[in-house]
Length: 574
Ligand code: DON
Image (cartoon, rainbow, N blue to C red; front, side, top):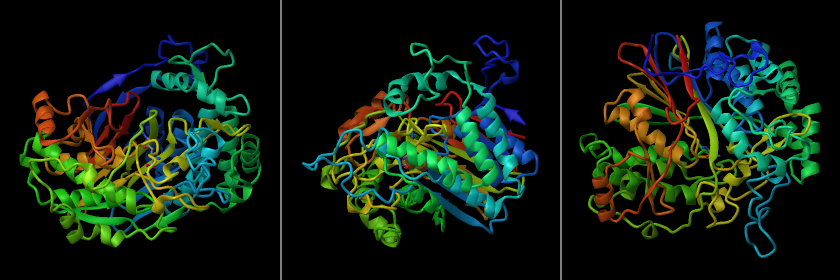
């Protein structure tokens, strides 16, 4: 086993940051990259990665590990890990006989309706779809884990999978600098959006969170115990459901006990396509991820861009022009296919994809207004989380899960201790009005009772010659799709290792606004100038994505990577 980069936080090793109880000492070793023979777990938090790996070492498979990781992240990574949100799984068994997706996306409550975020004049009420009770969709994560367990668990020991999360919530854990920063940044939001005192705000109102502080979540521990002991019913029925419904009543939200009892995660047929001899397996609607990824790959495949030079003006121009067309399609045609007739077949038709790109001009940007118009508003820092797992049998799980924005709606269910999502903002509140990610939508993604909001989450598995090759995914709102597109093509076309492909700088464009966002170091000054001359509007973006990836190398070993962009993301393996 070789470790490329190790950042040892040694958080409480010498107890310098105020941890009081040595039994809660967490010596966080952050590994950004690993080569392992047997199994790899890459997540947004070192404790979650270790918990997942231990499950595999104890004889669990990738699904068992995914369940344990999902619950652990709900405790140690409250900014995005969750039981009050939702997500998607893409799973492939090591022998290739099973390839499935699980949709545990949140649903609009039964009382939700199309104009629920509009005032009497038809204008969008600012903040209603993002902050507080009304922003929450019916959570799907617990039923998602329960369904995964019923169908594919090897350990068949639900309690074992929940126990690490219960202990972390009950006994507490030492927070990292990033988590302390997050909790301090969102303090005002927690105060504003809660009807009972919440554990994320220190009792001493002026005190700030510091690295190494112990975060204990006693209410959450009670909820997790209920789930541990009663499975999905521990969350969707009984005390927890009653507390959630009461919280909604107090705060003017819509979710009631019936919404909870009725929630069902749905197994879906994955989208499968080919790119330069690789099979890509990805998420269908209600995610836009799979369709958009296949369209992007289809548009650029005829071009030998691997020889253009990485992030040369020609490479960036080609990708941006494809993205412009694909995101215009996303805004118009994509939504929950159970409620709106999404033309999946037509959008993925190879002739359509080629035709759509036939007016590509290699020397000039097509203004987005020539395709369709839109406006952009990027308001706050969003959060989601992705984890990738490969077990000893080559079974692979790619899971992207979210509360939507950082700490979701910032609303904790009183007495039950978990944060609720603000996924309702992923619907189109009104045609032409952008959501948190600047995404536009219309009829296809209008709010309707029981409907799932359109997502960009793209948990993806790639195979080659019938063997597992890559496990990919990231948070990042609408940038998720273009990040997966880039990491995949970095490996296939630019022949990078997974470590290089994941850490390489990224760029993003999404038709509306008509801009190209470049990470620092994503393009030289000369390339930026050339792009401007071609007619592109170029802007900076601090960091795009938080990618967790795994690749099976030619020698059969697994290369696991945790994005260096985020301090705490860490990969474990053996
Ligand atoms: O489902 C979606 O596409 C969004 N709710 C994801 C949000 C996200 O990735 C925020 N992350 N940084």
